[in-house]
Length: 152
Image 1: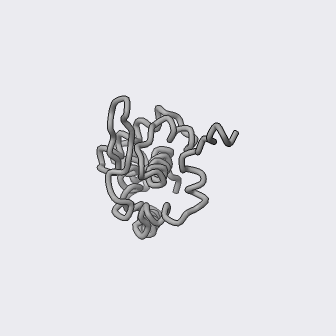
Image 2 (image 1 turned 180 degrees about the vertical axis):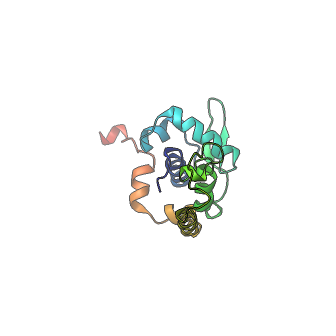
Image 3 (image 1 turned 90 degrees about the horizontal axis):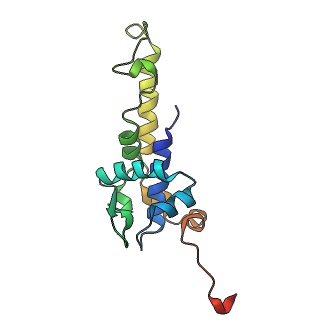
């Protein structure tokens, strides 16, 4: 199973917002700190906002913040929602399935069971479990402090 780039970026965005809850964050700083393009990021932020995971504010003093408490963001739900349009294999596709073995295939149900086990494990994780008490993550994603002129 391969996680799409969109889901990977979505989790990075949520983790970034989780480590910076005390302020609005900008798309450009997320792009820089999470090593992704602003164009990909804009699409993901829009989708996460539509799903209620993020709140966005437009304008000069605008930005992005979490739309829910971290304990209410279940990682399995995020993965399922973002990955829902991407079939695991061709035989899971509604439209583009050209596999002649679909009706007789015994691998297909095994793959479906494995995917459910994967999601069941992610259902046990919330965003706060990924972020809270994670000093290395905080060091990577917290705002960079500029030195005071007298310290330079």
